[in-house]
Image (cartoon, rainbow, N blue to C red; front, side, top):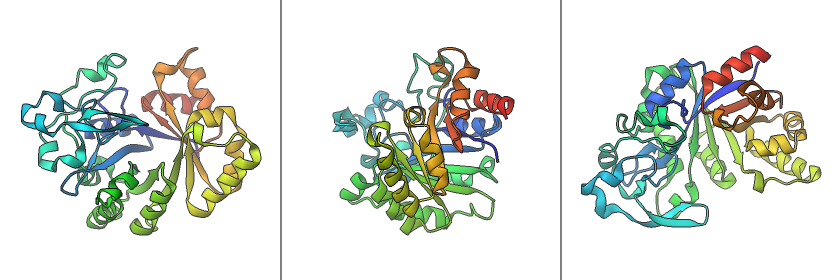
Length: 295
């Protein structure tokens, strides 16, 4: 089987990320799967946004009726600021919003679609005809933080999967998280119908080879795969072989055309020739073309 191309939050280089329109475009461009991010609402629904804070990816700041919902909260690693948070809003309120391109200066072609697309729900993605026979990669965000304030994201996701006919329609589900304990809880709650992949940032991954093997061995005992930041793969190419030896799938992220310094083909080839099983890409069509050319 060749290297899989994953539409990172859909075809996020061309449409505002994490929208149904971005997902459908990614599949039309030849992506093998799409990845999306799940966060909860106040009334226990799951919406698809990269973060639970909304100012950067929606038009919520222009909605006077929601101005009173702004508060100071966690908006990044060790960062707090005033924003609007999904867990403070009902699904009905979130459905009044429209998605915006998060990197408007870098991606004006995507930004021209600002204000056109809704914030989708997991239910809508699972029901979408374009998902039939496809793979959906669901990243669960900050499950431990939400559990601490009484929002059981794992239980909500398990219920959503039970209520959907995704299996009968040939859909494959992969569930991801940066939190190992949360991913174990998701696996216990959602069951063996999905695959489970641990996401890893480069600064959290050991540099010593013996320590790397120990980490990968522990992951292999608990999950189906690991998905490190591409810096891990490029700095420590031996990690791919070790992961495969242990029976793990290994993915990496994120291939972005804007980061190519010496040409698109050379840039993507570095990802492809690493030997990973799947690559997350913002412009899946470009990566699909280079994968086809190299394989």
